[in-house]
Image (cartoon, rainbow, N blue to C red; front, side, top):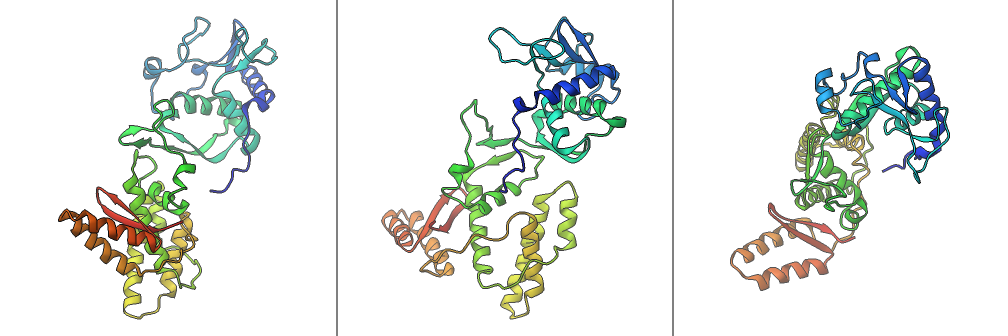
Length: 346
């Protein structure tokens, strides 16, 4: 992945937050109560549009701090007094700290302006965080400029059907995955599910993706084509709410056509260039450097079939020998629920 352009820390932008809060107060979208500053939700009729919740739903489902200082239960805090021994900053409303939502609005405005194309985040952030962020950003902008043109919320990442989280200690880091798989393989596994859907992250998914990437490496090992233009069908899939599974289906179909052209000794330059362009758009090209192996891929598949038969016949000595022989030739194999896959050693 490319590194981010900036990695701002919220504590470096306290003044920008204070400025935005002051602007909301001047425009009567916020009020002061007992050294707190609250955003007045009823002053923004569009509130609830992002999450699709009406005012009654918002009152019932609001995950905001209950406070006797609020005028409305759904009003949210922009600034609050710091508790004893708590980090804080001087402000026109006393020594305190910003609310959870204002920092994102202030930093986004600092680097992206009042309007930008895409705001991303997890589904769990739609309400209240993104709803509140959107409201305060629009109200503090010039002529109520829309904060983001598109809001993209990704589904949960699951590990064995459980939400991956630090609190459950059931998470995998990219750093660990990259000791076994290359970045293209990991990316392909992630793109195989639509971003809005939950993704059940399993070892078999990575093994299958790795097998596909390995075949691509073999297919394009001697290819001299350069990426040209993707097919219209491929682009149409991505234009349909970034439907990456559909785009991958088009890509796989084009690769099947390419293999037939190769088999029939027909020219492959145009189709190869199209496929590489599609891979490039998905971040799957350039492919990892093909590692040198001392065995033909077709022979590997034959040995794996023989090994599978040996295991079925409970001839585990032979199965282990085939595995060890492949390992000596630079091949690692993985046994999964849906079969055995292989990859060259790093």
